[in-house]
Length: 249
Length: 254
Image 1 (cartoon, rainbow over the protein chains, first blue to last red):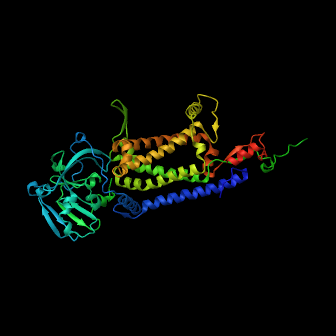
Image 2 (image 1 turned 90 degrees about the vertical axis):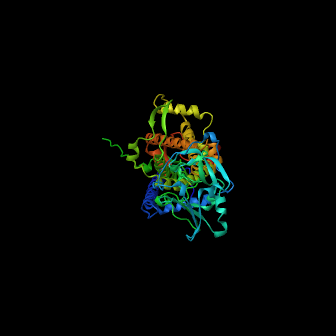
């Protein structure tokens, strides 16, 4: 219905009534929609419709993911030791000399155990990247360690083809994450044991932590105690507390 | 003894006013849909900003104003809501983007952009409007078409501001995946500052916009709802467009 450039005052009056009614109805519909979102049953502490939105974003950005595309790297001079933020999973004592990493398959069966030297035998890689926290701060830092993809290679024969996620947990189970296998296989996803060439400090995740510029810090588990390969997504500490499961950058 | 005739009904009088189309239906809908969307984006954005509220305004190390005082967050329930802030922000951002793109396409396809586009004279023209609006100068600067020069400049800038909000938003949202965009905006930290500054500019626009709308009066306001604005018919202007080539041209243009 096209609108005439000019109308009479009578037509205008009629129109005003109609427009105000339409506008009022639209405003009510908007208000209703807003209340509907707020009153939604929650899925992991956010309204279900918003959780579905996070999942839509996840599928979109997973589709757009290019495995050879790398995050920006920086000069080492710009890097500094990473700021400590969050101590979940690190509150218990750790005996670094007797630390072991347990690896499990999708069914939970133990596939292997490693000491730090096993990881150090894998090809060493370093990267100077911008670490980003979901809270909003960012810091350029440098990580050294083994590529997760090289580590995963050790288990390729024992794993089914449909591994979709990797679950990582601290030794005390106080912190845990699930990360999509796409990200885990990326060149810039490291099992890191060095920060600026020095062994990682305890509060930054000694002896071994996950480091990747493709995820927010909440996904980069410190002090890895256990790794499990999964065929669907698993538990995620902050995902269960209202955050986006994907948390990709 | 003579009696005055009672005034005749308004309808019997020759029409002294008419209603002229000012805002097309599409523009009106998108304008009003944009309003709650931008409120939600600013509100959820502030909940995100709270988690790392490091910006302040000052000169040479002298801090004049910190964004924001604790009482501000508490009053508006913005503190300790980061996860919810992100959830709303990353969902409603799509609606904001779609509505914004639709508006740009609509404005372009309908030719409405001609009413909005500024030109070389718009900057000095805007100054004239400003001086008039601040009551420093008496004479009212002319409108060019529907809007005066200050309106043209402001409405065009606010569309660009919307585009910048979306671009800097994506630069922060997926800095690795949309790396070139983040790079153009000077990196992640810089994109975040741009995004925040854009928000402040939106709020400034909003305040001035509300004041100006209040000043312009009810007829102007309702034109954004009905599409039409009542105008007085000039006494020498014929009620119906005459069959002159000039006015035929004018009507064909609409």
